[in-house]
Image (tube, rainbow, N blue to C red):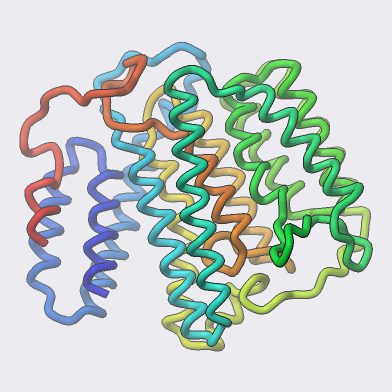
Length: 372
């Protein structure tokens, strides 16, 4: 638990605005003085809530900026992708802790761990292509939309629902893997080709039908329409709303699967600590969004809206609980969509966001990260 508490405070330091970083250093000092692991974890969770509040307060002026060019500002972008990867790793670990406590088959843990490794590999490939300006983003959106439509038409059908593809002994849910990436890429390009891909996705989700994913599509596009409105975005939102309405009009008889659906509730029947672990892991999936300040903020806001909607869907119905539940598709989907996050620290407005400017030792928590 002490290791987890330390990791949470590391996230706090990444989330805090520069003028609050001295508080982060003080928090590490207090953590080192707490002897009981449970108390240390409670202290760290309180710090995370406090840091998230400040991150949210610091964010709106960037989120509301609707210009496509870089914003000139004295604020510094944290290593947002590193923060997001840390949150993803922590959430996946917490999910495996819950599954182990609940007596899940060991292969569930192995599949989630393997999916994490695979997702990291694909993210590395996408990030390298993006950095070299070779990422075919528009084509990826179109091809992904076509893949979702093919799943709806030819995928594994159970009780009239066709959301899955069988790959040998594995069954994957392509929409959970591809839709988050499609959304962040559409937020970047917003052109006719990527609009067609989004329209195909909306049609596919209506045919499957998948109310949870259709709701996530609407949520992401609604945020995009608020932050970067144009004709293509509003058209995509209209397609998504029609698709979501079609899913609401259809019955969804899919039963709850152990360690996949409804685990926000069933985890507490295992142990109160297991339930707490699941809730914390789900919350960590949204935290990285508040670490981004600058030109990448609208894309990451869409990312956050999609995953927040999927978490809400998992709480309200028999839909997969992302990352903290069993299922490699969500793990891969979360990781590959992180290509939208800035790679490393740098001044807002820097084309490469490559090297952070010099700063005083009081701006971060680095002296404590190495010692606690």
